[in-house]
Every structure is written in structure tokens, then in C-alpha cells.
Amino acid sequence: MENLKEQLKQQIIQILNMEDLTPADINDEAPLFGDGLGLDSIDALELIVMLEQQYKIKIANPEEGKEIFHSINSLANFITEKTK
Amino acid sequence: MLQTLINCQIANHALTINGKQQFVADGGEPEAFFKQLYQHLNCEYPKFYKMDAQSKLGFLAVEALVQHYPGIKKFSDDDVALVFSNRSSSLDTDARFWKGVAAAEPVASPALFVYTLPNIVQGEIAIRNKWYGENIFLVGEEYNPKQLYQNAEILLQTGKANAVVAMWVDFMEGQYQAVCELLISKGE
Image (cartoon, rainbow over all chains, first blue to last red; front, side, top):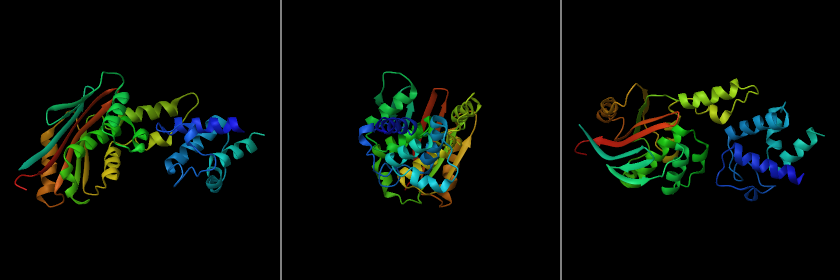
């Protein structure tokens, strides 16, 4: 799980061009959107594409997105659950 | 009649203000130069990194303009109009997006897709500077300052704006040029 979280942080930094950040700057529990990492709606779409491309996971219900993408922890838990 | 308050140009890995070179990079890829210039200008605007090359170019030209002509801040948010033009529209980014969707394993990047219009650079600049005045983006073969001035003059004469940021901003396959001027009516 820790490896997955680290990988997710690296992917988020790379895919979303967050050049000022390192994985160590991203707290596992901090919100990815709003006051936390400050991601926006376009970033959310990029994360959905990332899940499809890198993890072969499609989000069937967009309503789920808010919970899934809440934090690194929630995203890692979701991926772990789906790839069991 | 128009008066130019400041002229900023970015080309050949250099930033020039009113004809005087302010910053030169050694070389390298244009986007590496843009990053160096961003750091030189101390912009502190992380969204810069998410922009396409053309938006970065236009953004930096206006950042340099605002820093070297702070008097622009006296204009209210509806006072400043943006009159831009270029040759390549958003073709450089369009091509990058097309390559993604045409690949063996297609990727339709939403972050890239949002830049597949030439006037997105105006949106980025308007958001950054909180300028909500008139805007127009013209696409033509060559840099035609007369055309920019004519459009600026109409906006100023009709009271639609009190200042105009007029800019030629073009990026295509690593070739780039930005010529950015702040214009007002003469005598004001």
C-alpha cells in the first residue's frame, strides 16, 4: 500500500505538471481538491484518465469520484480494492 | 491617436523591454527557457506549469509588462482590453492533442484539450490579472501591428476600454515570438 501511495504521488506530480512539489509534500490524508493540493475540475478529468490508462479502472458512477479522489489514502484504497 | 506605455518582447531566448534586453538564456528548448524566465520574474503562479507553450509565452510577456509598468494597476478590472493576434492559432497544441488520440493506445488528455483554442491565453492572463474587459483574438499570416492598433483604437475611442494590452503571441513547433504593448489614447 505504501508503494502504491508513493507511486500515485509521483504520477499526480508528473501528469498534473506540479513542478514545485515532491511526493514528500503531499500528505496522505490531505484533500487533493480545494484547500489541500488545490486541484481543479480539469485535474479531476486527468485523474480519471490516469486510472483508466495506468490501472485499467473505469469509474462507472461519477458521483463516486468525490470520495475516491478525496485524498491519496482514499485513492490508494479504491485502487487496491478494484485490483484485488 | 495611440500612445504606447511599454513594449515587451520575448523571442530568441530573450526578454526585451522597450528595446533593452532584460534577460537572456543560454539556449535549450523553448519551454525550458520559459521556465527560466518564469523563475527570473518570480511569478509564483503554479498554474503556469499546466499551461501549454503558447499560454506560457503570452503569460510571461504580460507578467514582464505588469512588473515593468506597475501603473497598469490603476486601471479597474473592466478598463483593460486584450487585443491579440498570431499566425498559428492553437495548432501546436492541436497537433499534440491529435497525436494523443491517434496513438495505438489513445489518450485524450483533458488538460491538453482545454488549450486547443488560441484565445485560452487571454483567459489565463485575464484570470491572473483580474482583467474582465473586452477581448479579441485575430489570426493572420504575419505580425500586423496596424491591425492591432486599429482594434485597440476602436475600443479606446468608443469607451469600451481605457487601456489595451495588444499582443502578437505565436508558438509553433518550437518557433515563438511575443510582442506585447500597453496602449492608451494619446494625451491621457
